[in-house]
Structure formats: C-alpha cells, structure tokens
Image (cartoon, rainbow, N blue to C red; front, top):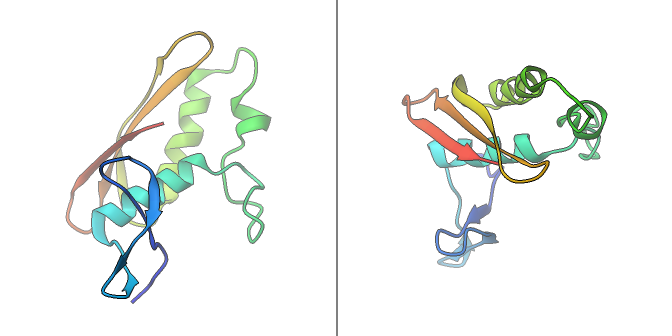
Length: 122
C-alpha cells in the first residue's frame, strides 16, 4: 500500500491537516486522493520541488505575463491535469474574472478507476 498522501483536507475548515485514527495516520484513496494530487499539481510552481525541478507550472515565466493568451494559460493547466496519476480526461477548464487583475480557474477531470468526475477551483 502506498502512503503518498497523509495530509487530508478538513471538511469543516477546508484546511489541510494530518489526522490520527487509532494511533496511526489516516490516509485517503480513490477519487479523493486523485483530487488532492490535482490540487498539488496545479499549485506547484516550476522549480519549487527540490527533488524534481522539472515538476510544476511555469507560473512566473509563462503564465503571469502581461497580455498573455488565455488559451495558452489553459493549455498549461490542462497538460498538468492530464499528467496527474489517475486522471483519464479533462471535462472542464476555464478562467473567470474575479476582481481587478485576478481570475478564478475552474476545472473538472475524470478519475480513471471508476469514472468519477472530480471538480475543483483555484
């Protein structure tokens, strides 16, 4: 059994936390684990992960640029989604204005094991 992810999201506070159950770490699996992998992949900056400097999105080099093409930005995020273990397809990816010079990104993906649709936002 792989223990890749032992930090879970608290459903009440929506913050990540480590949880003990019967003296051991509580782990997650299935679509919930895949959703956590997606959140990690979409929020990792290129070069941030010391053990693999090629992991992550080129946030500062390519995405946060003046007059950047929205299609190009969505392409980076779509590719990152498709690289996540457990994702078989992207069902939705879009940017919506969220105030001055900010956007909210909505995404959807299909979990390959059982076809569950996982949705999220950044």
